[in-house]
Image 1 (tube, rainbow, N blue to C red):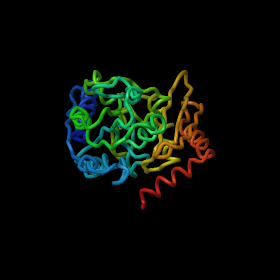
Image 2 (image 1 turned 180 degrees about the horizontal axis):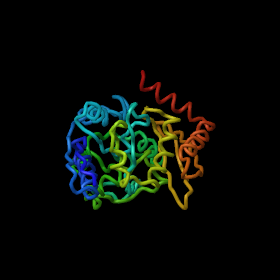
Image 3 (image 1 turned 30 degrees about the vertical axis):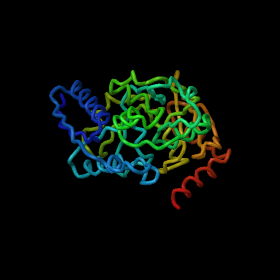
Image 4 (image 1 turned 90 degrees about the horizontal axis):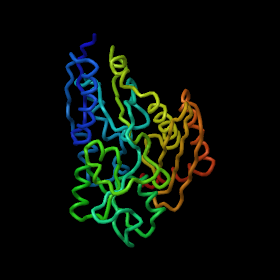
Length: 312
């Protein structure tokens, strides 16, 4: 019988704390004698709210401090929203996917409008995501897509204060915090292809920990992990650590993986789409195959322009 002692590093937003507490609870269910505590931290990404993530360093700003805490031995495990985890992990870390995966779709949230189609011209829609902004501009060119930073509660507070007619958020985060009633409409996969890893929880830990992989094995979801691995392989091949308008969504049915993906211009005037099928045993091969389809269509040109525009 194991009696692990585990410190979980976590951001201090309400959603991040919920996710860490959820994993803490599941670990103590497996190992009732375990001593599991949380180490709350404020990351660089949490502190910088006046600029877009793309302009200040990308999603890695939400995980760097947590990884440093693990490297220094102050923590043994970090719980992440997988959509916030860079495609390349630092040397010496492992990443598991804890299941089940929550609904990966985007959600429309608005106090007065039931759907984006109900908005008048020049209505203001808030999002922090280049991916969402690209798809919104392509589908609703008559709307104003404006930046929206902050944790989930901050975004909802800005919406309720009248700064936006509506905002787009991940359905997973709203449901995990018991805010599902704020969802006016779920956006279909075709309408808004999700972020890589959206809805999935990632468990990151140092590879040299003598027992962590074994302790966490019962939490690992092989199906969700195969889907996420396919999505992340595609993103790694196309964008690396850069934040670009890119979405991917994989589904596993009867051992067969299906992956849809897109790359688009920030303005939404050009969107490339691709999809493919592969096996659960080699999800990276599927991710690479679908990324090649996008490259053949001209994705490299779009991605290079995104990188160059932010470097200027």
